[in-house]
Length: 104
Image 1 (cartoon, rainbow, N blue to C red):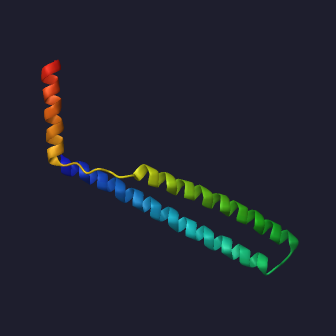
Image 2 (image 1 turned 90 degrees about the vertical axis):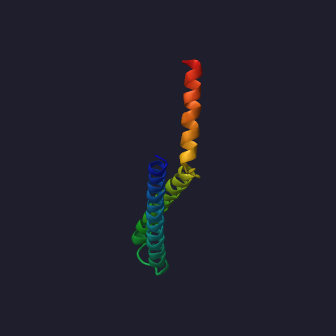
């Protein structure tokens, strides 16, 4: 039973790690897009194009902020997950058994 519980916990940890990795990769992609747009603005161009590029940067920055929030939430939820030993399970079952004998 302890092995199954620990296996389940490890699966959750792996899934969270994959989610974190995906979010970090998305943030890197957004940073690259923002840098490309900044380069285009620095090179100059039509005023209308610059305005559109600035709007796009604003949109990308908002998306990046949302990803950082999501990443923070994942890290908060993750925390430290205790492993469960067979002895812990036996002790808790015995405690429950004793409690039920007294109160039932």
